[in-house]
Image 1: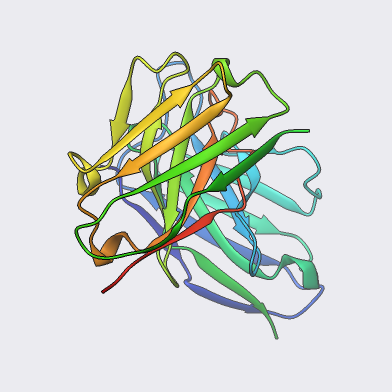
Image 2: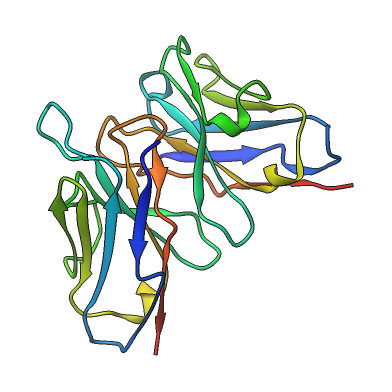
Length: 112
Length: 118
């Protein structure tokens, strides 16, 4: 199985400041069709996870443009340009290039 | 509007069985892979089972192989997870999730909690 490793695991951020989360995979997430199957999800307290970014860098419908995803191969980053209070929760990266899909351990973002 | 509504969770003794259901609406159910993803208390996410749109192919994480069975009824827009020989480490919230075809898991149910304890 592909192992997904996130860092940091805890991320206190001052509102208005940027934030960055790293995700590394144990194998390349580049598929033969040229797409990279890496997603980012946010799970707000008490809620189901919601999709933020798919195929490494494409924002899902309704996701604010302060969220951006980048990376290739085995190294990926989620950036929030200016953190807002509603961004609090746990962020997960997930690979979908190989079955079983696997998630990172999660990064808990809190407001300072 | 896409909706996924799980039911069937509860408290069960170790070694017992439970059947989870997911009622889907708002999309053409028969054209999507469907998944069950679980989250143990205070822990991360784990995809335990997948099923192809026509039900002809299923996939399981190693920890549930031989104990869990995913199935679907496309006529009733329904997904199920039969869980047998339950163990304490199966305790989790179980989410019904629509597959994506590569565009991310955009639709999750609200989850149904399963507690395995004597």
